[in-house]
Image (cartoon, rainbow, N blue to C red; front, side, top):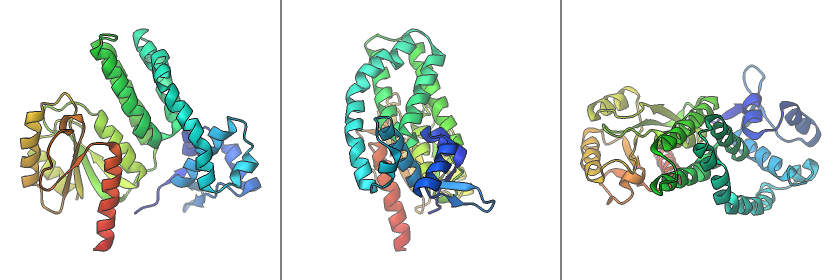
Length: 301
C-alpha cells in the first residue's frame, strides 16, 4: 500500500494547527516527525495528522502541549473519549440551532461555514464516518416532518457535496491498490454516497476513479477494463426503487470479469439479500473492513 503523506499546508488546514506551531513542536518536543519528499519538503503521515488533531482538541480544554506530547497514543485517545461523548450528546441540539436553522434562514454562506467548521474540527475521516450520516438523517427527517422544504434539502445536499469535493481535492493524490471505480447505475442521480466512499478510500491510500452518476452498465464494464480497476463500487440511495436494484446488480456482476470485485452500498440496498459475487455494504465501516479484507487477500497471494 502506498503511504499517504500530507504537506504542511494541508495539515494546517486539516487540523487548525499553524505551520509555525508544527515546526516549533517538532524542534521542542520531537513530534511530529515528518518525512521528507524528494524536494526536501515535509510530508506528514496520516496517523501523525490524527494525533495532532487530538492534541489540538485537548489543548482547547486546558491541557499543555508538553504533557500531551509525552503520552502514548492509547492514553491520548482515552483522554479524548469524554470529549467525544459530550460532542455526541450535543449533536442534536447543535443541529437544531445550526444546520437546520441556517436552512430555514436560507443562509447558504452560514451553512457552508458550519460544515467547514465541523470538517476542520473533526478531520475528514471522522466527519465522513460520524457527522455526515447524522446530518443527512436529520435533514431528511426534518423534510419528512415538513419542517424544511424540498429546495432547502437540495441546498444542504449541494453544499455538503461541495464541502466533500473540496476536502478530497486537498488530499495528496493516491496511487495505491486497490483501484476503485466509483459510479451509480442509470436513474440513480445521487452522488453524495460516492463522495463519502471516495473520501474514506483515498484516506486509506486506495486509488479512486469516479465516473459520477448514471453510467450505463456496458460503459461501467468498459471503464473498469480501461482503468484496470480491482473493484467497482456502486451507491444506491433510498430514492432508488429497490426492486430494480437487484436485477441491475446481477447484470453487472455477470458482465464484469471475476477478477474484479463488485461492492454495493447505500440505503437503497440496505435490505437486499446477499448476492453471489457481490459485497453488500450496510455501513461506511463495512467498506473500510472490506478494503482490509481485499488487501489481506492480496498479501496472501
